[in-house]
Length: 125
Image (cartoon, rainbow, N blue to C red; front, side, top):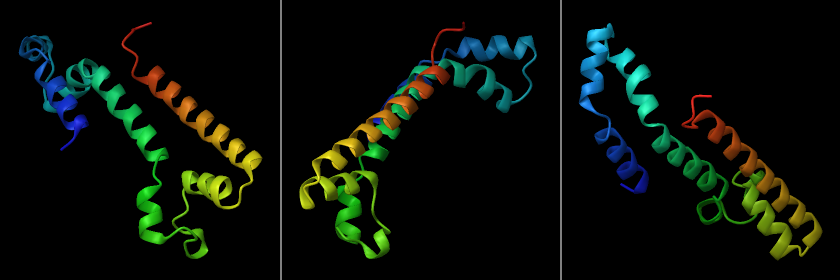
């Protein structure tokens, strides 16, 4: 099932049951409120790990797209940004354009990672 499954399972098992009991006493009435007010805040580190891994792996898709659609896919339908980078770097040998694609890919991945870090940060400030 992968690393993400194990991380989320460990995170769910580390949420103390006493928090749910205290929340029921304090007035939480249904499972949706338990999820929103207890489970999700307690699982922020696991959610951060899963989202950063998903972002990095989604921008790293190359082998599946190339093996299914081929390198020059019809109308570039299976052309991902990494396949575009590979095309210009190792097939057309236009290293300047390929390095600018790599910089754009880095900046996009970095900025999305920072946004996710800001959303799932553990600090309450």
